[in-house]
Image (cartoon, rainbow, N blue to C red; front, top):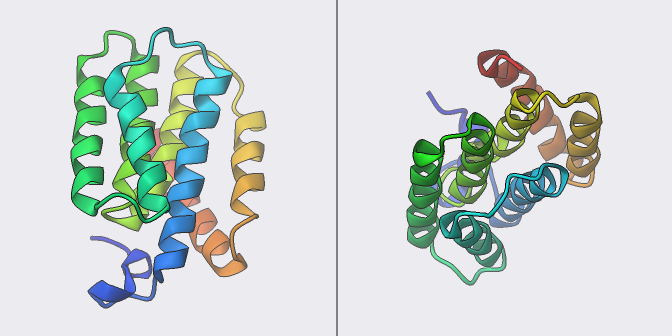
Length: 159
């Protein structure tokens, strides 16, 4: 069951369009930061496209439908990847762009980023700190909502 606090105003929830855009910006930043930390080789075009669509949606230049389609492409790339690190990175990107559809997907981006780092044998503390620092740039009510919910979800990710 979805957390109603992540439901957009136009669907009867409390999340404003501006808050929703801040969440997709943060999610996209978490995925992009992962790519800057890990060298996962040549990027699948579907992943690059998904990041671009996320950015365009944030700016009001893409539809939710386009974001959903880009997310499906990123998740297809994840399923096709032979390397589990690449799979987790692709899932991070898929969740980042899926934030346009449902804001609670925003937490999948940083959590899959952490999972990718763990699978790569890299320490997680520095990335967690970076993610938290970026999260603190959001309004306090949104940062607190995401932070608390992520702690609950992290257990299921076995991070």
